[in-house]
Length: 106
Image 1 (cartoon, rainbow, N blue to C red):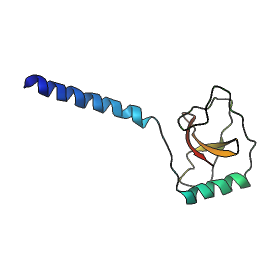
Image 2 (image 1 turned 90 degrees about the vertical axis):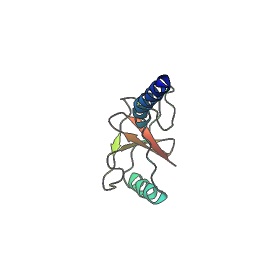
Image 3 (image 1 turned 180 degrees about the vertical axis):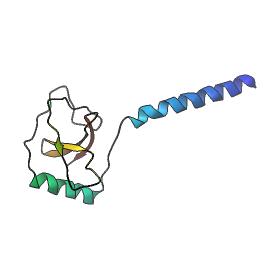
Image 4 (image 1 turned 135 degrees about the horizontal axis):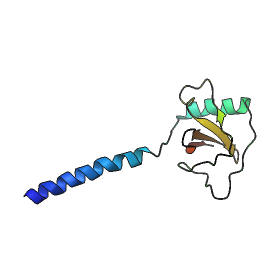
């Protein structure tokens, strides 16, 4: 019986340490109306589109290299903490500290 309790304790400990790994991958899911607001902002504040290096996939969780210039979004509280770039005609929201893609808006 003692070994069963030890195994449960070990599983709980492992589960507790695994949680932060999942928390590291941030995904922002803006509702359609906020996506429209972001698209309107991007249209009004046009920036040059970027081409990602061949080693970077355009997908949530990918990290953009330092040479990709990130642009601020002002006046949209839900996303003001993020930056954006335009890739292949799509608005890409990026977490500036990690430079990870958190949402791609078509």
